[in-house]
Image (cartoon, rainbow, N blue to C red; front, side):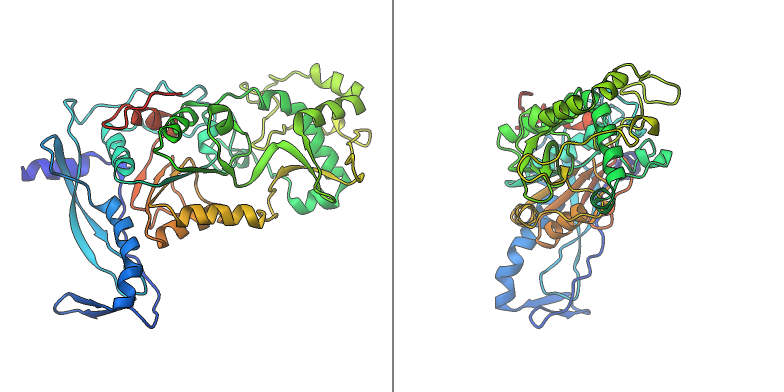
Length: 421
């Protein structure tokens, strides 16, 4: 039995559960720590405030083991942080997963993704990865999901930071300040956006979008927050909070008037008929381009095209109400998330008992802040992503896998058994 435990501990190397030391800041009320006797005395006023944090951590660190169908894998050192404490407690708990008749070498089929060209390389998840994620849902009653670009790369929409992302080719996205100050930058952006719009909206929701929508409809996910601007969650049947806005709306920077992006596309075409005709005749599969979209599709819907197509003669519509500057209703780099939207997202993560991050490196502060807040509030935290993330040091569960290869399989396990929408 001891050899089996040792073998299991090293065998499931894809699954990384990191229980790290939590350093909590000092306050007047808290825990008196006796280093010799390992005893804690918690003030009565701290107990009530600590209950939620302890329970939230226990959701991730403690798994039921009463059933005979659950097999022990390995021991994990975990941390039970207490509010207002300057110390930390280390405990040992045994992690268990639902039993299976399949061997530990069983892999999940990797044919779930519709387009792998933009998705970073990753080994298929082990069945144990799926079981741990199942336990994360099964042990939680109020789950919030935060999604990033990694969930849409599987649908052919590139991200910025992955090895295959836009940054890898030297691309620099437009900033809010550049868009506002430079008419030339606006012409360049809208010319590229017009050229890439048809292909951008042709992207279809992937397996991850469908799986999350099914979990949401079944009541296993209470809220979805997305950093993506592509509306693929909506098309899959979800109703997420769009943290960074959406390219499907265009907003006036002066009066706030909104216009549908498809209608704005028609206005661009009407103002630039010769230019629009030229775009239709462009060779979209030129050497070096991404054959799934052509002409170097970008994460926010625009594409890379030769500057001769957007010089001085490209015309941009103005606001119908005040003749102001029109901008996609997206939070560009250098801009701030609207306060009410940021407040809604923060309230959601602080009120949940489990936060799952899907397909995000959490490099933007707006996303990382939410994960940190959920963790500090006592929620169980987990990440499914290919590659490192900014929150790896403190989350309880980290699975290095493609979203579309693990989330759909979650629907078939145990009491979840949820049909895909």
